[in-house]
Length: 174
Image (cartoon, rainbow, N blue to C red; front, side):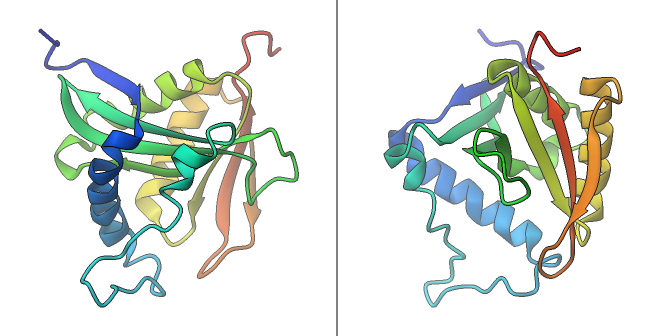
């Protein structure tokens, strides 16, 4: 039986695409105030056209489900390559979502740490300047994980610039 507090990061399978699609709807709804160009489709869904690529391009896209106590608590979508870097090998947190009831409980922090331990290497974490909650989360989590050894810079974006954190999670990093 799973510990009620245990956070687990599971690779998502193509059989879980519907689950991820449903979670993406919640995530995009949450982001809509920060991104005024987000529109509902005629079917009442936001949609996420790139989701199927996470199974057709397994060398460059990595989907994960976050679970707490065995229950779904969110997801992470990772890409190799980032719009904020010219490095084709850097891992980018394309999307990161924790359901509302699990926020501020340490679930997101633990999931990020598990992710970086699972895929060691060069990383980009980024948040829109229009999303203050994400800015605070990534600033704190990256600083804690790297002991302050991360580069922070701004990258152009729409509707506002992105705050970007660049760091290395390799075991041999100095």
